[in-house]
Length: 68
Image 1 (cartoon, rainbow, N blue to C red):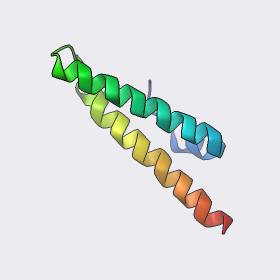
Image 2: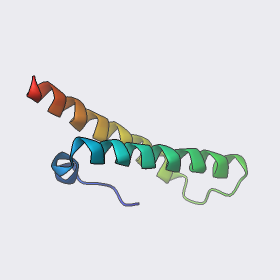
Image 3: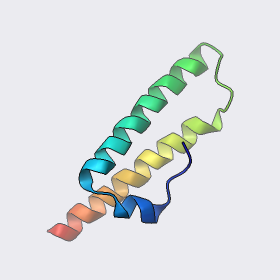
């Protein structure tokens, strides 16, 4: 999964953001198992996934604050 641009995240609906977060959390879970078993080839993907989750959560918080 390639890095999502901030404009794309802002264009998503709340449900799409939640789904994206859920998918990224599942991916991180699988990456942790791959690392534990020594099968992880792209170690930087763990960091990218973590940052992408944070990016989506930040945009979601900004949109909630804007709605108030």
